[in-house]
Length: 260
Image 1 (spheres, one colour):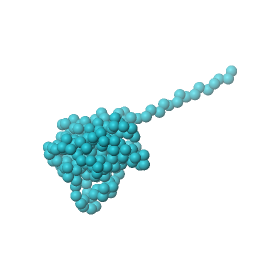
Image 2 (cartoon, one colour):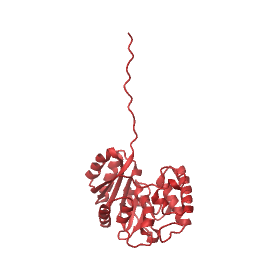
Image 3 (spheres, helix red, strand yellow):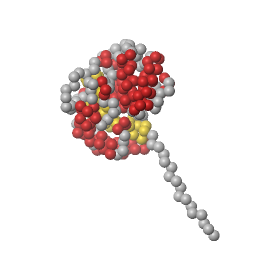
Image 4 (cartoon, helix red, strand yellow):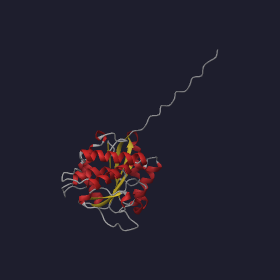
């Protein structure tokens, strides 16, 4: 009797969904460098890592910072701010720029947090001198108490690092960030908002954080520019910066934070 060999069951490969964000504060740039290196070594793509802080060392003096009226991140191509000026910490990440925030001052931001703050800052700060970093972080879904702590820490010269992770790996990444010196660790059951999930097919694809700050005509122009750059570069952060650059050059922001 000839027996047919039984095949071992095939392993089902399941895609890991990035759906949580771990936030932590670090006291020094060396600690920030360490945690970024560890996250990358663990296999985390740099597009899921964010850093925000005031006092990044630089090899040259920055000519100036954008004003409250221009409270939008400066893109890499604009000439005022370049990631390479701020050492290896920020040059590793995407979307490096500068944001002026009341009560905190000019901060360097890199990664999806920086681009997420573009839309949040436009609405939260338009016509108001009272909004600060805590208000912006709360706009992005962070509890107000924790957001207030982060504002105090960043104002004092410390650094906020965020890492977007799969739910099933939250524990190990949280331990990794804590072992690198992370304090005030917080886990949010969401990732930072992006303008679109891939290519934008219409205004309904825009995230609320972006759509709510653009007039209907501005939405269409934003989508067109975003898609063009995304198709050419496959870099969502670069596409968003280019789209916002176009909005700032073509539209004016109203007192209510609408680009029209």
